Length: 343
Image (cartoon, rainbow, N blue to C red; front, side):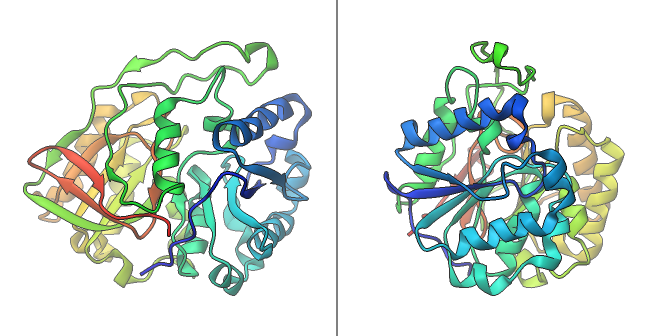
């Protein structure tokens, strides 16, 4: 069982960090960071502090993984800070690994949230025994043009601000992954939303439950074979969650990676899989075929598989808490988080 952090309350102080890409500190998009901070303050009533190295810009952050790790460790150790939210992902948070003190995380449980390459810091928390939150980031969801999406706001509040069971996670009515240049002249331009077709049950029957574990499937590849790769016990009876990034990996890559999970025994141990909406819905059908191909190869045609969920590289999005009990109802085609994520 992972330790659940304390719930957030208006007035709490939260820290922002840059564990991978340092763009939040670059002058041309600094406005976007400030807009995300403003939403944290105005929508959620939180007080925001940027960790000392987090806004030093792309070049500095790229050259100093030890400084990124220092920000993370200091944010955990600071008793006045109740949550840590990442500015954005990137591609190399794995470079922080040599500088991490797992005892610091273990001894100072608090909310930690982000997605994409932030999968690696999530695995750091996981190794330390802390439940963290695969969810929105400052430069994307919080800094959404014009206003935050109400769907995202709702699931942040239900997940982080209340100690009640989260309950059924409804599909978003609409979605977007349109990219508008992060120039201040686009600040008041809304992104185009498209109708969302909802979840697809690709296989499985009955109702299954399991503890959530997963992340961005490309980033998880960085962690395989390292000290932060979860022990076998954590995969047993789990509900796996996978999603793909803006790099839109090929369907063949999905096959190769999932065959590795199968060879490890991870897929056989799991109780079910949820898979996020592909970026731009690119390879939407091909990914379905790839996943089911591997499951068929390993005799897992009955493993519940729910597809097209709103997490990861799509907006709006839900928040997935690591280690918290979730449920796939194959009869109803629904997904629920059946316990509280915070205490």
